[in-house]
Figure (cartoon, rainbow, N blue to C red):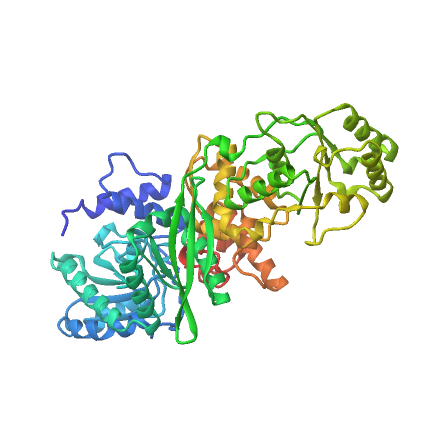
Length: 603
């Protein structure tokens, strides 16, 4: 075991952290323990009065327990009569089995709520050989006064993760605890050997579906040198080449795409954007066991480099009406490239350009990019929303004058859906009277229900309309959109949007589309310019809307109150529980049931 500072020194350092929320630079506390203590303080753990959280014994008969019980029961027979306890927890920190060497040790576990059915992660029990292992993802040793909680100051614990033999994801934690004065150097090797034995049994007990997925992965790897990914809603298997791509795409986006292919029971090809502006071409095939689809096999067939600025589409100056900053956001995605190409093709064919979409999708941005270029014609914008204010004669007269005098230029009619029938017919008359070329006119049309309205002017413009999909229909590109907006508003910021944040955003409907998303990105960047942006950094109302769909009005009100309290308490669950007037255990139960903690779930 380590040679540690005295209990008094460690307690003094912990007390200083509680008082000032900081440790001195020359602290005697091990770095990994100091970090764990910091997490405990942030979670509101009170070292002298832990708030136990009983979840129940549901799930304690799962695959992990079935694989571990024979191994640990046999090992613990050799430890009977000693002051040792052994705890097995699942990947959420829920205790699913416990063993005690004596009745006295068992009594201590029961008094401190360290028995089957209780949650013992760091935010509840302080740093320990289970919660800290889950936080660090590696073996952990906590000796005596290194514990944050008073009740464990006289104990030493060693814990190690138990990983899935196929995916290598953490499935649980094995912990060995004894009196601090009885600790020895054999504890860690003992726990590691036991965990390896459990992992071997996990493989033997893997479900038929898991083995089929692994077989599909190995078979695909043999016949192809490309990046390969096999996944379902519980596991992800990938080779090294695919793992590098996963860092940019994110498992959440892959799962959203894979689930669509699984539902349709057929192969699909698609292009997914990367965070750096590049993209990957994916070939996806459903994996079947009998007639049931149990997962998806993905093969990355091509990777494309990020486009340079000229390829991404630089904006040209627009004369006339003001164009909002949100609609000028450059959106470097595969969908956007296809839309720009469709618009350019329409122009080359001599057709009018009509861009259709919901509010905030970036219709004017696309018009600018299609009409722009080194030899671009001057552009003048007239907003149809002003026709009712200016009057039909004045508004149509201004457009007519510009069309006639601005030879070679392009007039853009923005919000043509706002024109009344008289103004629309007058515009058609202007085009016929002056024989206006169709390429001299472009327009944007805002729709809200997916259907395009009729009318004389719209019918004339809608020869080959270009429709921009809503953000909720482009969840696979959400990560790229967020990255693009981040670069636009904070080019010097060194931030990374984590998958749980993107997943949270993907669960929203985004009625304001890119404009609304851009406002959110700007809001987050006010307080975060460096580091990772997780779901926790998102505004409380966003997190409150995202976790679960189909909630009742009362449930949504309760969820809003919880997220508001957590935001007000800066994530401190103890303070949030006090604000809500409920116990900490009740708050944890609600957080889990509503799925607020996306960083603790798969998808």
